[in-house]
Amino acid sequence: MAKRPEPHPILLTARLRLRQFRGEDTDAMHECFADPKAMRFWNAPVHTKRIETERAVLRYVDCTPSYYRHWAVADIETDRCLGLVSYHDGHIRNKRVAIGYFINPSCQRRGMATEAVSAMLDFCFDELGLHRVQAFIDPDNTPSRKLVEKLGFGREGLLRDHLRVGDIWRDEIVYALLGANRPS
Ligand SMILES: CC(C)(COP(=O)(O)OP(=O)(O)OC[C@H]1O[C@@H](n2cnc3c(N)ncnc32)[C@H](O)[C@@H]1OP(=O)(O)O)[C@@H](O)C(=O)NCCC(=O)NCCS
Picture 1 (tube, rainbow, N blue to C red):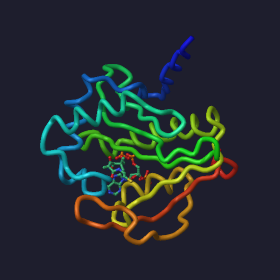
Picture 2: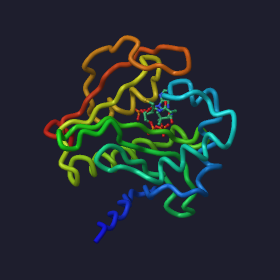
Picture 3: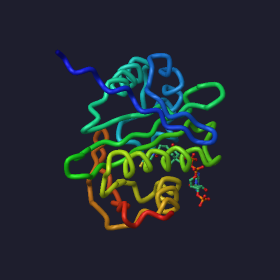
Picture 4: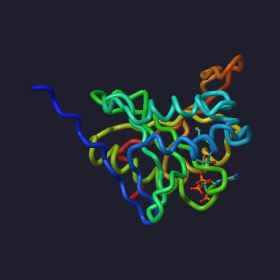
């Protein structure tokens, strides 16, 4: 008999519900991906057509948990999608992943990413039993750097021309957090 897929884990915080993406989240995510300022440091070019976001959201619905998983970051009261958190480049057997996150510009600077990423880190270390979580961040992405530094990540070095977006090569700083060193 075919194995039934595991249900997508729901993670709760004081203000947020991290849940599986749905097709209805496309418009909310398109607000993020069509915003050139918010997309400056993302790993894909600005979305100029809604269909690009529709396809992205479809990829987020279907995950391969041993390699990557996306959660919609939703308001706990209204269930409106405010952004995403994800792990990817997963080497679950080697107990290592990289993470990504995006909060709608209209909701930034209210601690949403801190809350959502903390919940995902709890899942990564406590449920998946990971040893190391990495983040690759453009040196000019101050909000993202402040976020991971606040969560206890250490800076390990600069990777030159590590990411190609369109025709542009970008440097990235590698940050990492080891489960054993996680602040309580
Ligand atoms: C990075 C991002 C997710 C942060 O989301 P957020 O909900 O605004 O983050 P928080 O409110 O939890 O703040 C986290 C820290 O970043 C700081 N911060 C947030 N926005 C900032 C800004 N524009 N300038 C300077 N610091 C900023 C906050 O002050 C906070 O640090 P502090 O508590 O020490 O003051 C958001 O800016 C974003 O979605 N950016 C676009 C996508 C992106 O670049 N993702 C990361 C790719 S590596």
